[in-house]
Length: 90
Image (tube, rainbow, N blue to C red; front, side):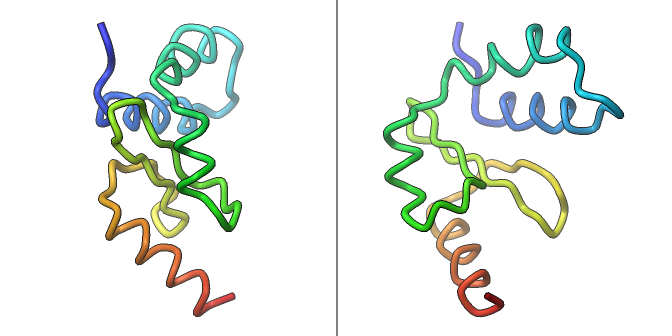
């Protein structure tokens, strides 16, 4: 069974909400969620090396929003807007 992008984002947020990331959390929640992670697509989607996005094998994009400190399922337009905000503020 594969996890959906929303389930993976929720798992990442729960893990980051923990006061201390523990090995049981990593092994039980985060690592299995990242089995859907497409390394090549993620690298291609991050030409400026922001390291704030994860692309899944189904093409879904999960973006870390530094304003809310949450991982969210995002569209390509939302990712482009995030990149543009960085260029303007950087």
